[in-house]
Length: 315
Length: 256
Image 1 (cartoon, rainbow over the protein chains, first blue to last red):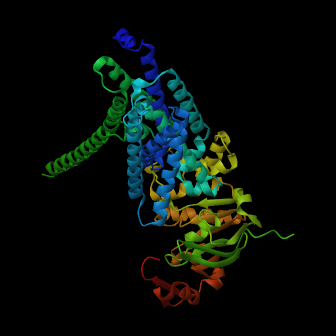
Image 2: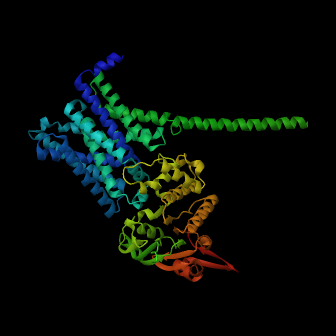
Image 3: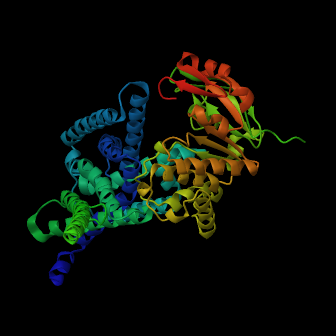
């Protein structure tokens, strides 16, 4: 079994894909924890969809498929998108959820139009940009994975260095501002880190499914722990594990795409967490209730028996 | 040289969108006093605190803490936000929240260590919550959560405290603990501004009172400021006084 398992990854190409997917899960799991706790789960989705036109414009302007340029394009589009969401919520009566939905679909629409245009132009076919919708992990090569490793390392290092700041910002931004923290700057920094995670993930899972990798590991991790540090690490581990399982199933020869399988793997881990997690999980709640009910019944029986005894004594 | 007052606010105005919530507020808070900020709903009590702390932008006016701008005096100021302002289902425990009060002193990147932990435990003890240090914060009652916020403010080691409705929705034990704590702060010569909504306890808890309704109605020692006349002006027609000999009961239509 183990030999078979290893054989699947003996091919260097498969190894790169495996590393890539695991790094992606790790990085997005870590930064996703903060997005989830700051109640910005949908923001990740909006930023992922907004990244598409940014990447397309970056490709149209440069004509080359460079992750660095894509990163700049996606970050610029992300800034415009967050600014748009902020503008709509501040100046109209529209609430944030509706503003997110509007911005998300408008940017995605523009992205699809640009994508179609690129594909109809000559250079489009080699660009592989059409893979950005759902991703194609199999297209990852060594240089991609090295860049992903560097970016993931930076992302995790920033989260580790600013752990205390991010924690306070997620729990009580008002208090953080009172302490003199540059709250607006830190919020933008978290947004930027999300955009970075999204761009890293575009190649493997695509813009449509990227939000799942940001949020699902974080939500799953929250079920197992009451400590933020543990949750962030666990979320990264769950993300990496999802990447591992996704790549393994995909490489087992059934020709299914790696990215979506990675997302499905993380969903399976999520379901396991919801059901089996201690204390917070459904199963533990059911058992706890049953135990409480049993105890109550035993107490009642005991009292009844006692009363009966006393009555018999009286007779 | 006379030391500058803990808090002096000059000509402060604040607006949400276009509607002004506070107009031309000017006052000097004296040192070592417990100051209750009282006024009807929407009078701008919380807004005053938030504007003084720079949490919301102000239209005009200046705020000085011990004679200097707030940005230079942050370490002298402690803040207790409204309990409902955060989501308590956050993965952390009581001790950890109290340690957040030390973050301002720690500076960037540095993590809280044993010294911070020790200080946080002392603060938890002061609010009677030492036994709950390791408790997940969503497992605490409303009153206990309020005490955690107070302990966090204590950990800030400040000289001037702002507290936003600390008495709302707490049990009798917590209310008593807060009052004891306020008096302890006062004996240490610290100044505390408290947004308060229960008119019945104002005179009992505070030695100075600020009556607020968009404008500053009156500000001074409780005996001379907390009068039927001033209250009537602050609350308009919403207030009914019932005189029962020496004690007067106050009724406010709607929630006070």
